[in-house]
Amino acid sequence: MQRSHFFETLPGSAFPVLDWPWEQIEPFYQDLLSRPLDVERVERWLADWTRLADLIGEAYARLSVAVTLDTTNPEAERRFNDFIDYIHPQAQAADQRLKEKLLESGLKPPGFAVPLRKMRAEAAIFCADNLPLLSQERKLASEYNKIIGAQTVSWEGDELTLQQLRRALQSPDRETRQRAWRLAAERQLADQAAINELWGRFMHLRGRLAKNAGFSDYLTYRWQQMLRLDYTPQDSLRFQQAIEQVAVPAATRMYEKRRRELGVERLRPWDLDQDLYPLDLPSLPVYGDIDDLPAKAEAVFRRVDPQLGAYFHTLREQGLLDLDNHKGKAPGAYCTVYAVMKRPFIFMNGVGLSSDVRTILHESGHAFHNFERLRLPYFQQRIPGLEFAEVASMSMELLASPYLDAQPNGFYPPEAARRFRIAHLEHILAFWPYMAVVDAFQHWVYTHHDQATDPASCDAEWLRLWRRYLPGVDWSGLDEQAMTGWQRKQHIHRYPLYYIEYGVAQLGAVQVWRSALSDPALALSQYRQALRLGGTATLPELYQAAGARFAFDLETLGEAVALVEETIETLEAQG
Image (tube, rainbow, N blue to C red):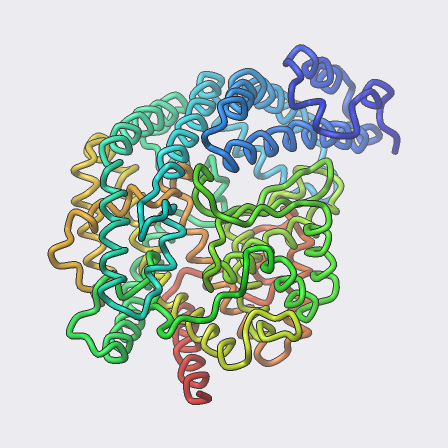
């Protein structure tokens, strides 16, 4: 199969495309649109479309990475905005015409049953009037990043980002923790008005997106936009109920155990880290300087699987890691793809805490998924549901956990590694209720649009859900800090409705880990085989390939919660 002569003129790297005007890109789309499409020619046509899509996709990824690495860089912001204003909408419109051409042809290339299903869903909600609005939404997300990236405090004579302040929140001295927690909360509340104003613009824009596409509410529109074709909003609500029945009591038991261990009358938010996970007191040792993180992670991955270790080595050698935190860097962590290079890129905000270890394991799971799925020939086949992409990352956290004491370059000595595993499992118990808060809040927001446009109503609803799902922590006297938690959850602002993925994927990951407890080699083999499927299988099929079940029910969640609690007890008995 050879590419058309015209497509041979495309560059072999995405860098030239970063500054191409649309007039330089458009002829390639026109060429694809003008070609006859039949059984004999469809493979070459798909290959050329993939080549073009990979170039545009990597250009977007590189420009997006640049504005998250430094939210204060005006040149990076200008280039990113130019791309999403002048290139991205035009490319989306052209892609829509190509989708329609393929769908109208009736052709069904091998391995395209699921991609064609997704194309039909995308084509059905496409609206040209929404293209500039989608570009505007990306700009608003960058504004949110700038607000959060600029948050710093003065602590003992040093200017620290709130991420760096987390070290003080790990202090064994409760008064120090409380002082640091209140300082961080005060700084976050200083941006309350700015985030509220931005929220109003987000909500107005998202309401227009849904209306333009012919939907009664944004939730229904966004559900289809995210290609959630294997489950419904009702499944999500059912999962929230299951969490309330089995995960909330388990998390409450865990919080009560921690209260007794600390010897305090009430467990307060400064007795937990900022993600509501129990603190490791005494703290786990730091893994060293941030520069030590990649070498130690590679040592762990080589013990999990030599090929995964080799993948991570490639990331190190080719400069595809940006792991340290600094002022002006966007919050959070992610793994993106440079499709032409066929390489992932990992972004995070490490400050030397044990949470960084979980983060690098998590994002590396995404990277391994990308290495495996990028082998598929066509870009439409490489896009899995996010609900399974998070299984790739969360499973790696658990599959790698027995090897954290790898010597000579491991993260921890054996006793600390055991404590890390306990803390990680406690984090899972704490996570499900928190996930339910975020998911339930977003369901409310996008089915009560007018009410939720008012930030005060959002504060009240978040506080109601917070009290419902997180009864084990005492927030008395801290209502203002508690009710504004939705402002600090970046997914709510930047990736609307993106959070249920973590909850169901965590359930899938626990099932993968359960298999690994009895047969590590088989579990790893199934895990990697599922990663290779990319987007050529449905979510239930992907989970099944990984040795799990795509589920929202009380029984499956109850079994997972019981396994986590039992394993914590076993590990604690070894101490």
